[in-house]
Image (cartoon, rainbow over the protein chains, first blue to last red):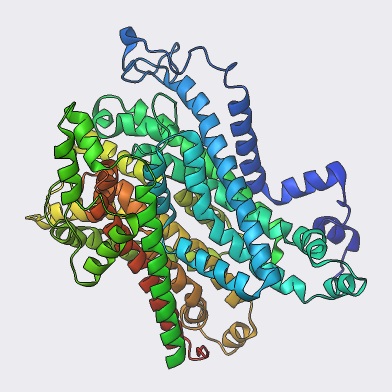
Length: 297
Length: 315
């Protein structure tokens, strides 16, 4: 008969890691890829915060004497066609990606939560109207809707954030609505009703907190796609305007002609975008496994 | 079933009307139309000329009338005239569709033929190094911007052949056809391949845990028969959803890839028209995209009922 060592089995399952540092190290060991993702994300945030201290050059200063310089000890990643240092531009570009990523995810999610909660909780005609609105917003791909919106509103940072946030609303609203519909039938909501709590209070204090886990999972998953969409918009020339160093914009300036003569202008911004998105995707996957075990794959 | 289809079709019409209103209004909320842009560029011009041109283009009428005029034309196959080329919008849009459709078809074929087998492999070997490797590959597929992938391909072509492919809509040899269509299609399809692989993997893992799989193994079915005939057949439904939705949402990748490879397709045309504020082209292209999306969703739902006899739509 097989001998089961209950202590080691429990330890493997994480029974000892209930809180604090032990829990963090346990999760970090268990979700190695997620930890790598979190590290990349923290690095990305740290770069954005301390951008002014970690580069020698100003990202906007034009230096025509050093146009298209190859990567060297002075210019780690070379310079662009205006002689601006690519490394400083990438470091400062992280601020734009981070602002757009966090800004549009937060804005889209909060509007989505309000619509989803109202739709699921109030039902009736409110639900019907919101459902049709989300249908309409979902009939256009993210990039197409964002493109039309930035073209209409004009290229600027707040407009790009808004243009990317609005297409995110329907997905969040759908998830929150489905969750709210399920939660509404549970005994604790009935209990809250029976002690005479108002509908608004139940919705905000009891139903809403229970939708936080799926919301965090969804928002992290969307963070990557907002960064990618901003890069695509700027690449197409309809996102963040010159001279701000957006990663996508850096690729559009260089694009096809520099493929031949200055490959560093193509390689480095692309690595920056991919790494940031890869980090959020890795972390998002681990977060989903931890917070939403039903979806675990 | 019939009632369900009728209801779905009615909702599709509502969605399309909603899209048409949103796009029409969005394009017109900014002050300044094509006439202002043209006249600003030309410096001082006679205000009477400006008023004439605005009347010719119908821009002096209330926005609601302009909208109804557009919809009425749309229903009669009249899409208006492009502001930039002054040709009928239909003649500008139609010839560009086959190029983009070919790219999209190739990209989807690529993503299904790579994504499904690798997804199955990853699920069958769950927890092994191969599985980890494939999962990282698929996650990086979702992280690479497709325009960057396109630029990297161009770069590789420069360093290998010393030249970049220049798009030719009617390739003469089959090698040229591959370079013209398959390479950009792969750049677009890489992301969908990664997505298909992820969904195939998680769907397969779910199915492989079920009792009937154990029964199949117990009766001595071969490993490949269990994986493909028993498991994949039941795991394919979510995969079809993803491929169906990707078919419509591929347009995002096509927009940037057509720009990188300089392909005169309908996706790049949207960006050009937006830059020029060529509203008749933009609003009709957006309607075309929305129509494709709602039709793709509808087709996927109908395919469900065909593939899985347990699914019956009732109202």
